[in-house]
Length: 73
Image (tube, rainbow, N blue to C red; front, side):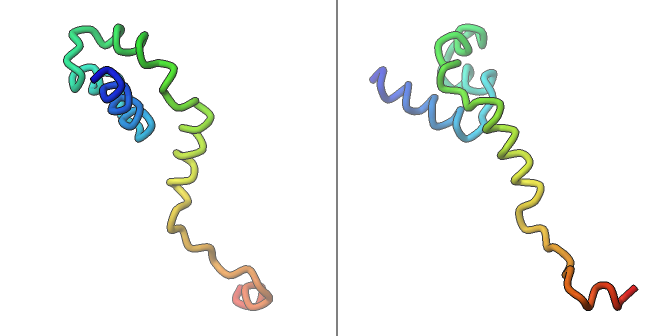
């Protein structure tokens, strides 16, 4: 059962769920306890930063930058 809870917590943290919500889902009365127990599962800030920037550019359509662009001005 412990392994299942650990897996559940790791999936939610990897998906970006916050510690306060995870603490509630796991039935912990103190989010600090949850943070201390599961902090090693949290994605690195580097990964969160990369995801945040990637999400801004997802689906963005770049304007053409070929010779016709120079002629349009």
